[in-house]
Image (cartoon, rainbow, N blue to C red; front, top):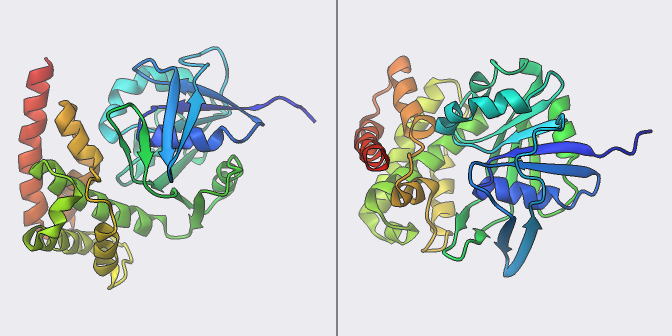
Length: 300
C-alpha cells in the first residue's frame, strides 16, 4: 500500500475556504495546497473562544496533480478563475464545489466529467474581524448529495466538530440555503446594518415575507420544503449575535462585487420560468445591481 499522502487543493481562502482548511489540517494523511488571488501566509480561526492557526506553506503550487480540488469561490468569481481551473483539474481530479446557489455543476462541466463533480452546501456563519481573524460562530454543517463521491469527501475529515450529512433530495436542501441566505444577505446589504436590525418588527416582517416568496418559487421548482420552514428560519435568525454580518454586506462595504446571481438573481429567474411573482426579490435585484454597477465604476 502506498504511503503517499492524498493531495488536496483548496481554491479560494476566504471565510469558508479558511474554515475547511482548518478542519482538513487535522488529517495527517492529507497534503494541502492552497490557491488564492491574494497572497497569504497563514489562516486564523476563532471558534468558541479559542484561536486556531493554520500555516500556508504551499501557495499557488501548480507542479502537483491533485486528487481533490475544493473550490470555495462565489458564483461570479468562476469566470476570472478559468485559467486556474484549467491548470488544477486533471482527468482524475475529484472536484468539490462549495458555494451558494443551484446547479453547481453547470460551471464545471467544461473542465471535467459530471461524475467527478460533487456539489456541497455548507452552513457555517463566519465573518472576518478587523484583526484578520475569521470568527466562526457555529459548528459547520455540510450537506452533500448521497453518493460514493460524497463518502470519499466525508472521509477526508477526522474532526468531530463538524456535521456532515448525505441526503437523497439535494435540490430541496440547496433551495433551503438559497431561501435563507438570500433573504438575510439582501436585507443586511441594502440596510448597511448587522443582525441587530431584526429587533425591529418591520425588518423581521420583511425577512419573513421574503422567505415566504422564495419558498413559493422553490416549491414550484420541485423542492419539498416543510410548512414550518419559515418559522424555523426566524428562530435561527433571532439566535444570531446582533453584530453578525453577511458576505453580501461585507462585499458591499469593501467595494467588491455582490453575490447576486446565485441568490436573489436565481430566485427571480426561476420565478419567471415557473410563473411565480417575485416582487420583493425583483426589487432587491434592481437595487443590488445598482450597487454592483457603482462598485465596478469605482474599481475601474
